[in-house]
Length: 168
Image (cartoon, rainbow, N blue to C red):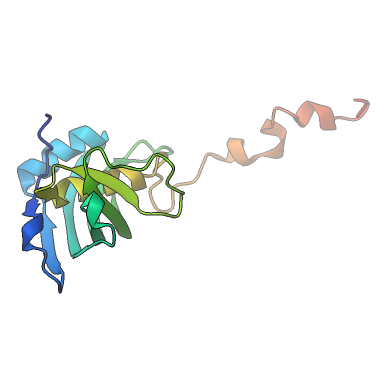
């Protein structure tokens, strides 16, 4: 089994009838390792507040985790190629289920399922996975614009079709 860069294990037995709240925060070393995993210049900070409760399906060992994620990443702008800090904030829900009981047919609007061994859930890895899911594949620093040539209508590959005498 691969050890995650940011692991915060919580024993499921600690989740009582009233639920459980936990906050997790990545250390500097964990941020460095996560930056490599995410393929970003740096993870400046990463923290997440979780509210945990037992799910409705005890036969699957369900644990519902509602998270409030906050992170700051250093990204490279696709326009300027300069690094900039990109804040990230997200609310999400994941469903921890016993390994082997994951559903294949979950709908897009349902919570993602994360398998666990039956005794411990990993809130750090859940937060890291959410960051990875929310990464902008084409990060653009605030105010970055494409060069004027790219927005010029004559630069379009279809500009030649607009010339007089070209049949349409």
